[in-house]
Image 1 (tube, rainbow, N blue to C red):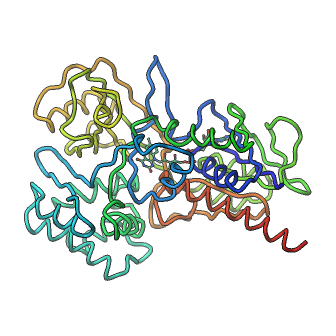
Image 2: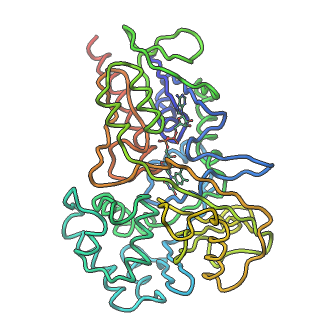
Image 3: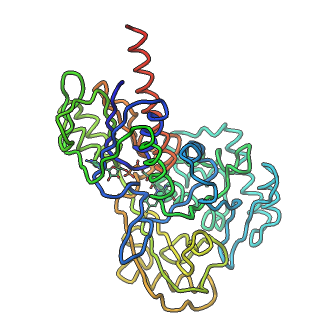
Length: 437
Ligand SMILES: Cc1cc2nc3c(=O)[nH]c(=O)nc-3n(C[C@H](O)[C@H](O)[C@H](O)COP(=O)(O)OP(=O)(O)OC[C@H]3O[C@@H](n4cnc5c(N)ncnc54)[C@H](O)[C@@H]3O)c2cc1C
């Protein structure tokens, strides 16, 4: 049996492990941290369990959904909302419970706060993209796409730019038009209305997939070694030695499933792929800040998720309505810039003031607050970046992670898909070997 070592127990590494274990392959996962999930993990402090950043999934995440079913995750662990855009006092758009495209068309007709020009502009951009078969010039930015489609200023400001930040974690003027078009193709313009649903996990992000994945692996003789960092990958005759792993085992197949900056370091340690290591190290990254405010029981937002304007945060989530933490609000700032409004030491008061302006009432002083900034949350999804594939110059050494070449930005779904692709390539190689015997 071919043994596979996977470095990293984030969504990519665990997706790869589950897919291999499903086909009876021997898998061992090495994880540096004591917690599974990587950038999508639970953080425990002072008896509280919080995600290291609020995450939103969409119905188009088909591979993640498949793995959740496979590993026995109940659909009740995720709240599913029809596509909704609610910016208090400005816009309220909710897809209707109808098949596509009538869900969106009816939602647009019934939307509050949009004039007819703006409603038509939403429809027009999708029609424009359909006519182009969702293929755009590779260097086009989202702002250029919006200009080409003559999107009104207010719609850019309230809808497309925040949507671009949420989906690509990159400001519209820097973000890849093509990747944004892919997202629109697979959500708003998809053949099924469920593709555009917004999915908010009710459980923490480690509990959502990593823990069920670990259970699935345990039942199939898979191993996960936590608090076990791999410090170097050393090519040997028939595979790779992993510095930091217990024993002196040579692994014929190794998947580096870490964030890009760690992957670049591990690749460099092979002394055999300097160009690839440099390519990955050069990928630009963007931060995400999540501000958690515990406002106490009885306090909530008018919807599970609302859009925010005129302040540092773009979105706020009510963890009482999507989860069981009543009174807990998670405000999200994607791709913050040092000069952004309110983005200084006064972040918490600035976000509270922003929420109060949006809600039209004063919030009680939070009982407890926490700010979590992931400095390298995702790669910047710009048109000019060069994302690598899963193969490396060394046969048997693979890459998985959200930064791998994909139709999608760096998300849970792209992480999972890269892991699955690695698993399939490894299994295809095994089949080729057997057929050559
Ligand atoms: C704040 C925030 C909000 C986000 N919001 C969303 C969202 O709403 N929707 C969405 O789809 N995506 C979102 N993302 C992106 C998503 O979390 C990532 O795309 C995804 O988690 C990446 O998974 P990964 O497996 O590729 O990498 P990682 O999660 O980084 O996993 C890599 C793992 O490798 C381990 N590791 C590193 N080096 C070593 C080593 N030497 N030895 C052993 N182990 C090692 C790490 O500890 C980690 O567990 C968000 C990310 C952040 C940070």
